[in-house]
Image 1: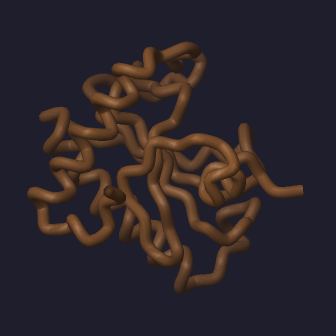
Image 2: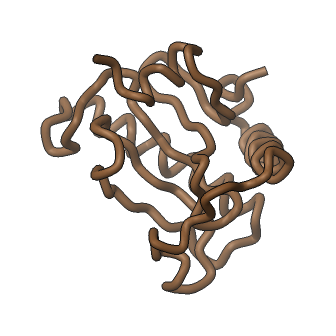
Image 3: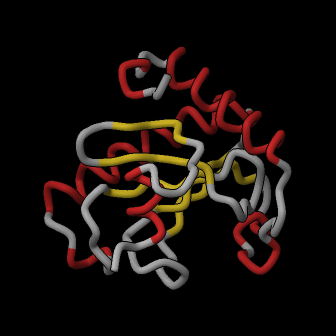
Length: 141
């Protein structure tokens, strides 16, 4: 059975994408720790991060860093969090989010029902920052 992330990637479920390439995508999570929280996900279904092919692992991390720079710029955040939790969906994904305090890393405090407007605003801000940083070729239309 396909993971929920594979269904988002294939378009079977909706997603607010900020990055797309042949191997990796990034989209907003529906349970953000802070506004601007995205997931960086390989298209290939791999459950455990330690099982991913080295080249794909490098690519996922590269995209997380590029998207992280855009998140930082879009939110003027002092730090950008990067977390591999891996318990909620059996498909490798990196959480990338604006972080202002250690409390921003508390998954028990994630927003349960963010507004569509806040998610759209976050998507648009991150896409704009990616374009400004020269990555427009990977920003979905």
